[in-house]
Image (cartoon, rainbow, N blue to C red; front, side, top):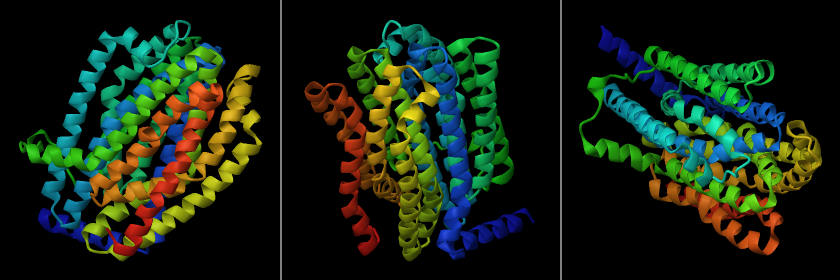
Length: 450
């Protein structure tokens, strides 16, 4: 009886993923993810906002920790995207046992790696904060915030693995519920612990850690009750090939986030000579840019499971339609947000920090960023596409461009010649170049379907 019910659920899922009109399916799967990404981005900005009331050095600490968070997210996305893509493949073949093996392997591996990072990070907290670009005035705040980020590390990794696997199983609403609840809790916690209890940066970090634990618990319940795959210790794979497959498919995510961490640390260190105000300004710009990307490109998260499932099912034409729809949808929203960002740059920066020097540096950087974001609908969806259809080589190449292969040289060349302006234009310039380089890969898939 159970096998019959399982088969029925599998058949129903197959019909939904291969027969529902592509645009409707992407929106249905993408909107919950977009909302959860928005909430996540908003609570990141809430940290920036509430900590900003404590001064520019405290606010700069959130920018210092951005690199560490990128590393943690990179590991989580590698395991989450890697296992999620393989789970989608298994479900397209109606093999729920294989799907359970992949999610269980990724989940417990992520928890173990998270614990190792937490322990090593806490033991080496001060040198780690300096390595990430902390000045002596920023260091006490970075330590307070970083300690809680590290404590939350295992929960953050496992939460993102669960979130991505729910998405790839077509259960985006339940994935959204877990992250959104944690995000709202973080915003409330920021207000109470920073403003009311007066715990400063320590309180903001505590709120972040608590929200990650809550998100993890909710997502674990959602996955165990709603997903076709099952998480069991007995399902952990004993085959090295399964681990390599997960890492190979998820490698572009690790490269992207890993290079983001390296670039972020380099950016902070190159910005040091220009003072805490410059670090604080660039922290606000980076957080706000991530918010704009969430609005316009969150729909691409709905495209990923559609691409993975339909490509495996031989429905390449549907994948092509999905790519074009995702790019067009993203271009409209990112375009509108970029125009608003350009004209209201000073007001946006002032919302987070009203010190004149921070506003001056940040507004100029934000206008450059608004132009660079216009190219993101070219680069991000095609990167998601190649990762979802398990073309890890191309996806890894595209992942390296914006996050490091173009950004790092731009920083190293631009800063000595242009000073602070070199820092302000580095990311937008790499965004433009990444978008242009992505065009041949878009045309290749549209023409050949691979």
